[in-house]
Image (cartoon, rainbow, N blue to C red):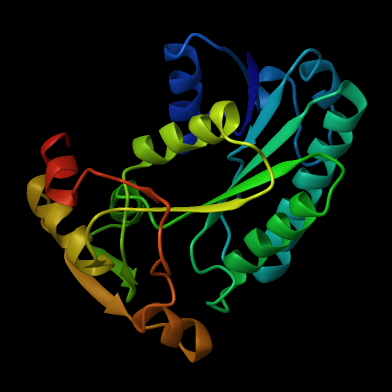
Length: 244
């Protein structure tokens, strides 16, 4: 099977590419570095020739609603148009658990991405994931001595397990459904950042920040927790931490 990975050079995308190849399939990376501009669609049709499935792990680093909605809308539409033109049979989307329940700028783009994909011309499957363990590391790496962490209750999962689930959906599952994956334990995100900093022997001040308004309320009251998961990650944060 020939599987294209949009955003295949990112955190999850690169893991999906590895998983695809380990299972004996052919992986096509859709990224600017491979000549594909997902925001304009340039190069997409050429790259998708002979592709059976597209897994979209593309992402944008923004908290602004307008930027998130614009990015995910454009990328999804361009991918679907190119898929329709080249005969791709299945479109798989990576989304976020609780994006439709927590009124946060970035999440609005993910909700729009789901809507466009599920109503588009290509049979689509959505995988909603909780936050990745790696998110704690991203927050830590982007900060100096003071690390500001949004106060959120989550049930995080290893990015590698999410990548494996995406390939499962692309190769073994009939399209048309929305699936949920989460880790085995609930945690406060600031606790994970603190524990990771300690494991890396980094002295950091971890500042919990509750976001104002409905978004902050949703994050602390369980809006990002799964309401039942049909795909369950097995790795705990302690297990993951040992690999770091």
